Image 1 (tube, rainbow over the protein chains, first blue to last red):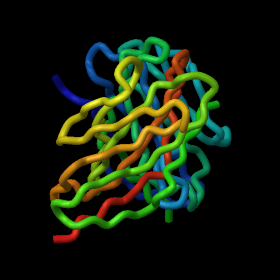
Image 2: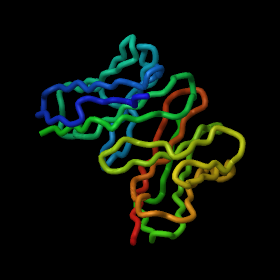
Image 3: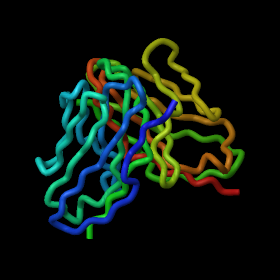
Image 4: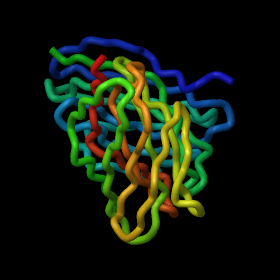
Length: 114
Length: 113
């Protein structure tokens, strides 16, 4: 069974640009969560999607957005990039019922903003 | 909302020594609790989880954790550490009625030969 796949694995952008990251969940999983990981802030929850609807949202500015498609694949977008957006962005999937527990993580997309 | 505290940022132990990583949570009811491990450049891998029942849970790689409701704690233990256990360890909490998992700041484990 294939795991969670994130693309691209590495990317470099400059301030003011925008970026789109992609996540393909494990087959059969309907929930996709996104996290930002930085050395200073640790793992911070961005948002969670279930059946194409955003179900939960963390405390990030509106520059961070996401969506989920009918096949459960998800994308997140960051517009008007800032230096502080440099981070490892992790996607995780689960079956998706409320409180269903274990998240399965991808290896992440490492974004560097210059 | 739920939250997690991992008081130790960095721990160093000798290979073969025992290990305990601390985790305290805040939540209005009994949450679901997890320990994940992250090796450099990798995603997170689940070590173990607690939903209900027996408060001592066994996980992969010889790890175990004990849920103590009175102390709001879920500490991770291993009787004998191996060099390959060097990694970052995250405790996480999830409310029983949502899919929003929150993580602690992590504890980085260094293993001395």
